[in-house]
Length: 284
Length: 230
Ligand SMILES: Nc1ncnc2c1ncn2[C@@H]1O[C@H](COP(=O)(O)OP(=O)(O)OP(=O)(O)O)[C@@H](O)[C@H]1O
Ligand SMILES: [Mg+2]
Image 1 (cartoon, rainbow over the protein chains, first blue to last red):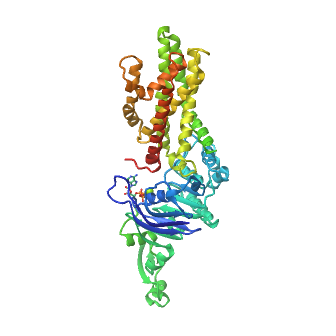
Image 2 (tube, chains in turn orange, green):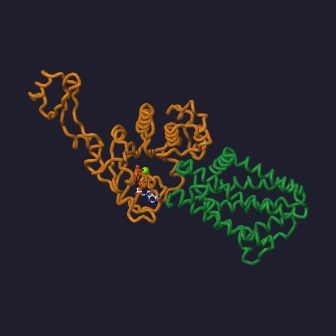
Image 3 (cartoon, protein in one colour):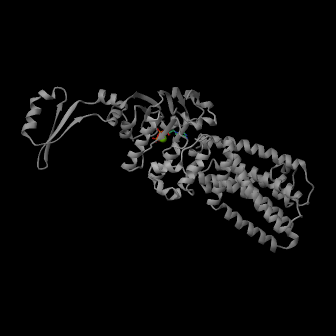
């Protein structure tokens, strides 16, 4: 669905390239995560892929079309939600969705149903100016789904949301994927990426350092250890054992028998730890 | 019918942000002014008011709209739909021209009376002036973030208003007649029979409108869609 080859981009008046030769592909039905610290070039790449920034070098094809030449019909088939709310504040949620819906020639989804799906049905007739940040983000998300797009571009879709609403949005993203939609997700949030993405790309300083599935990454980079926490009355101690051969590890068995065990955990590297190890950079 | 959707939305946006009330208030003030001033001044003041309405207000109202839209961040959402910049600009200039034309015709009817002016010519003059100065306003608004910056920037555009000095008979120069405000003034006066109608006024104003459109389109793409400002 998306093919990016040797993409380079320099902002006018900038000394260095913001994007320094990026390659990736996203297949239909895939949830692809684009992860990197602030200033890495995520938004720039997204703005190029959705056809807004035209002065790039290299090739970016979306649904077989070079986006530099994208016509207005291109936008009938994609849905985009941005990191910041972008709605008409003197209009109600419903009026906002109806207006944006009226700009598509194809069939659009029922705005009320979308609002219901993200828990905003009660606020449908309230002006957006009265919305909290989280409510605006959910409305933003609805707007991206209006035209039933084949590809969804989501920039930090769960930022500013409480856990329940965050979970709900994640469920909708997975539902969309099951309907065959392709999803391009940009985020700082490794947990979200880990839960949702089939593959992730790590981007730092305008370059992709690695593309792989979260599971592969954790299996290949994770430490295979078990940590046991034991003790009594607040005076707890912990020890680590190799996961391999654990059943025959006498020390481990002895500990289970003799001490009062509080917790046992396998030590998986989180995606965040892998990111830091791979790129030498923090994700903030 | 994306143009219709965008146009209707613009009109509603102007209502919600009380542009119509501001216009109504100004129109009432203008009418009262024209009512009470001495009659020997009346026709000149009427021409000035009718001129300032599309040219001055058009310029500032479009600035207000764009700054509000920037603040609400709505362009991001708008330009990932199939709407084009051309459709957006057409909707914007038409909605503001509608406001300017309604106000001007009401003022002319109250101040001069029905039958005292050529409605067709007045509407043409106001519509073209409004479109031209709305487009100039866009070229400034896309570059600034705050009302203050807009006001400071508008000083540069005040060059376009130098022909007003020619209107008052303070200075006179052939060059001034090719700035867009002169044909605008000339056409408004012609609609009241104060001067003959001149086709070259119409042409000059049309050419300026074309230039302003291309300029507004280019800068709108550059500063708003591609966000290549700063
Ligand atoms: N309009 C612009 N003009 C000039 N330089 C820009 C512009 N927008 C971004 N940049 C620069 O390009 C680089 C990439 O920025 P970009 O916004 O793509 O990062 P990001 O990964 O999206 O960061 P964040 O996580 O903070 O959103 C940065 O160095 C930034 O300073
Ligand atoms: Mg960004």
